[in-house]
Length: 183
Image 1 (cartoon, rainbow, N blue to C red):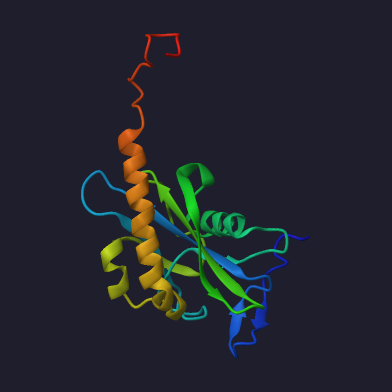
Image 2: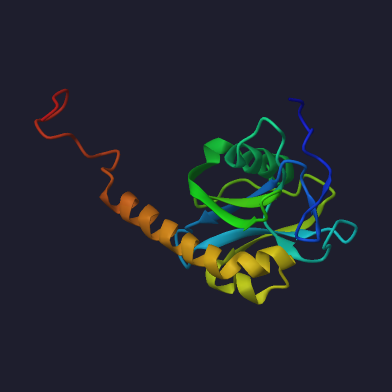
């Protein structure tokens, strides 16, 4: 159990090589701006990395001791600066499961304007893209394959998030029975 012990290629029984000795995970960070449609955070992969020049989600190899959620949150912090306090995780979605290797997407909703920045040489650019426009970009092939199902899941998460937000009491709402009493 060593930090970074998941880094490395796997010769998968599907016939391809995948990054992540214990699998991999990525974060689909969604935000609901004050105006306009919901966005997904994408990163443009640097030309020198595997599938460089394609748009992908922050993510990477899982270490032996990590859950998919832990790995995706760690990678998002390393790559774009998002911290666990800046988002609410709403679940996971398996993008690929080959038996000996899998990639999980962790879906979270951020505040309207979280601080993000390119923090590694693996990324050239970060962009908030309307969820309905993500599929029109040149996506990493695995994300392109997963996107139709992941998009449906993201829209469900956003719907639940907005419904929860609409029914949550505001900071100025007082409990029934007045201050200091639970009604």
